[in-house]
Length: 373
Image 1 (cartoon, rainbow, N blue to C red):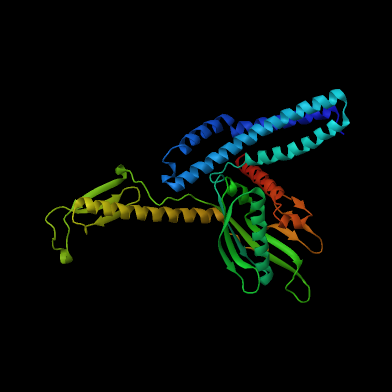
Image 2: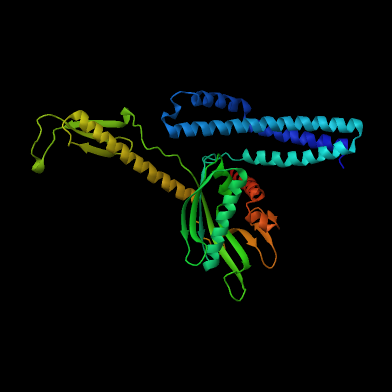
């Protein structure tokens, strides 16, 4: 049972942690962002561009939820202070017990909020695309990959995060060779990126007639959903325009006016020429469309290269596993980076991953701080 001095110290610690979270989250900036997004969301022509409308409403909802979460947490801490004060004055054991339960709940929820403030990477606030690939272990590995797929989908479902399975390659006997799915939620990438790596399963194989123990591997790759557009605006200052006379086969002139157009994109050096249209205006418009298409393709290639760099090289074999899931001869899931472990393997496979993810995010931040100190 807590005494008054214990509650005083605990409440001071809670208030200090919450003050740090508020400073990082910046409620004033959130309120300004909500006002700006609300104005955009109320525009009568918002849904003329459905993609942009969806983006605005999603960002507004996320900002409102963040501010609401902060407000509710501050109120809960104030209510707990009042509850402790009442219980102490009246020496009410039942109310003190209720205060203890609320204190434990507050610590847990505040810890989760604190972890969110550690997600400050370039792409952390993006949605995530997760790919799971079976590795060494034959049919057991394919089955293990499918178990991991279900585990992560259940984790997302627990949090109310929308998911979409984009691609699945099924194995011949059981399980999957690979699967890719999207988690469309704010900070999904920052949250799930610590799950990237090789996952090892040790169990009695359900595919072995002799009931032998089997070790299987699967790789988890997590990349941010990089926003793409289907149109690129090119500033006039980045284009050099040359006009010349159209020419036919053998170099003969087929036009007595300078109707052909050559566009040079100065930053990239991409050159597009167009002379098939009858007028200079038409040729310029056609050349601009081709230039935009080429620049879009270049951007997509660069994004793919960046995604590959972010994903890294995950081999899914002995020597580079980041987490072990053991079902025999004992039951335990242990993260080899953070040392975080639990014995309830069934809960983990049903999506109870928050403890591992929170520990991973804290571990990553500590490594980043050590690298810069």
